[in-house]
Amino acid sequence: MDRKENASGSEPTLPKGVLAAALTPMDQDLAPVYRAFVAHCHRLLAAGCHGLAVFGTTGEGTSFTADERLAALEALLESGVPGEVLLCGTGSSALTDTVRLSRAAVGVGAAGVLVLPPFYYKDVDDEGLFRFFAEVVERLGDERLRLYLYHIPQITGINLGLPLISRLLEAYPGVIAGTKDSSGDMERIATLCKEFPDLSVLAGSESLLLDTLRGGGDGCISATVNVTSRLARRVHDAHASGKDDEAEALQKRLTQLRASIEAYPVIPALKRLMASLTDDEVWCNLRPPLSRLEDKRAEDLLSGLPLSELL
Image (cartoon, rainbow, N blue to C red; front, side, top):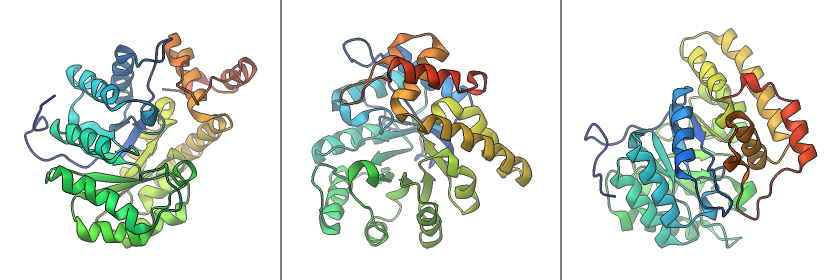
């Protein structure tokens, strides 16, 4: 894998708008099914997604080896998905894996890399967190790197506080390009937009899409956009066109759909929905410790959602 530049030969354009945190289909042996993954990514782009975040939380990225993630990236590129629409999840507790994955993503012209803090050790201080991100930047030593800080404290147990973000921005301006904020805290997102105007801020849920755009943020990266992409794009476009009333009404419906899915464990629910929408059982499989929805809950999920509105 040695594609040195993106399609235009220039540095990546930062991702904005509606990005899907793409799911990863697996076979019965829990190996990634690359043909279904590629087809799904193309489907999401055709449905209006501005970009794709691959191998993040929703994509079960931390459950896959670096080699598996790299093979998926290669499959996407070979299928014609341009690197500049990809935000690659490269976070790992192993610094060297994060560096390896990030270097590969930069090398193929990806728009950026989405990096979790090292999440195994808890109660670490800001100095340790700064050193981790600084090591990633320094070891790559590539001016094309655009690093997105992934704030999801309910999963990692790690808080990326504003003082830490400020320090990283000061040390690596232009390289620390943005953040995905999955805290669900709109007040924090609004503060990030206000305090760091050069930082691209993306909400972790499409339920906050319109408020984030209104606050000066760049959009959302969301799990449930795997099935709500068309509607999420309509919210974005209505806002961009100055159609505030239309955007508000569409956002209300989008938030309702998100809430209906969030009533269940989100990744198993989304995979069950994808199995139904595509009639392909590879979507039902998850790597432990995640588990399938029980049959009764799956039936309730499918009967409670208007499948014609999805994807």
